[in-house]
Length: 172
Image 1 (spheres, one colour):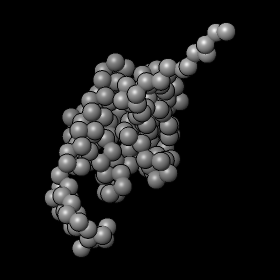
Image 2: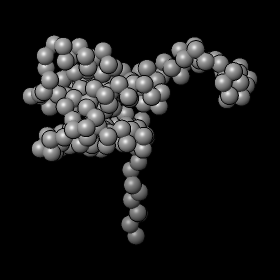
Image 3: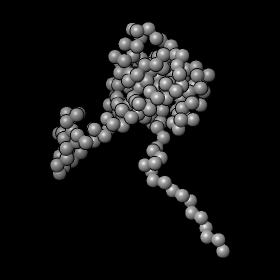
Image 4: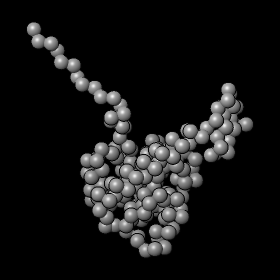
């Protein structure tokens, strides 16, 4: 009688959860190129074609990173970036602008509104993926630092980065 083989399991640390990306792009051909390249790299992709769809997706299921075109129908990418940064629930999500608007003033505007990076079209898929990975690493490092800075004494929690004090979970 043969012994039954058991499935091999690996620790969760060896297979980190897939990063969720929100790709906001109105050109369907480019959406497909991005979906293909990013899913091949192991990212989970959600697509939005308009700024309004992007804002709705942000409210429903916040991603780990936003890849954002500037020139969108309706609410443009700059407004999406501004609204994302003004909402505490989405303010820390990394945003990479991916756009045909490549003038110096456009880049400066995007970065000043809160984008973490700015890539002009046409772009290299390998460079884009590398920049996404860098932004996600930086975000992960920042979250760890935020957790490390929290001081908890009994029911009192002091968060020096947010300048907040909470007692039993309520703002003091």
